[in-house]
Image 1 (cartoon, rainbow, N blue to C red):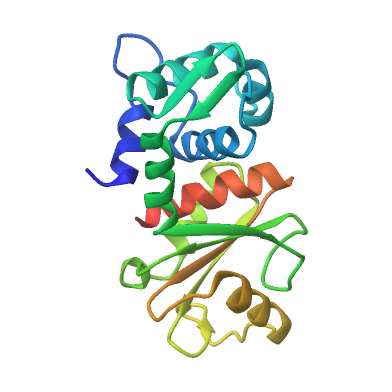
Image 2: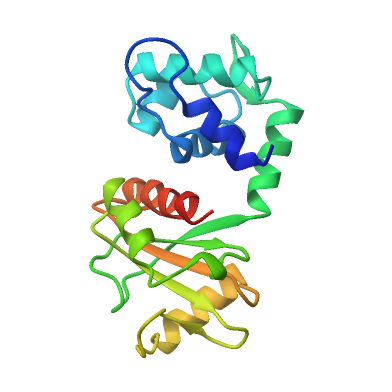
Length: 201
């Protein structure tokens, strides 16, 4: 099973009742937070993820059942299995916050690289829709052709400074995709970008 299917399974409803409030992008963000803030507690994770404590309790329970995390009085840490899962996801996608650009609709932007996914891109509308459903204001999909970034279905040129930043920070290869998402704040931009990336995968 690929790592994205694993996150999808964790997010699925598995008992009668409501669908869990967390989606795969939230699970990925939770794993990243647990790894970066070793010993993070449930309340802190709830605050960082902007999810209720009940949802976070369910998420932690599922991650523990799958042996992706270990818990103690000192908080949560990733297990070897959890670190391996995060590493495998990182082989397919990586993201960064980026400054304001004329190809976005606001100032709070997050760019995510999705490796080898250009074949799945039509006009970028699907990625934009997935980002908006996750709370974004808008999204722009770019495809790397081997020497430059292009916006599918248009002849819009990417501003030179932004292209240089994306190429240097994300280092795309031929056939990779970069999705730039704008949200009302950095957290929403990141979650929406990951939602668009998951949709593309």
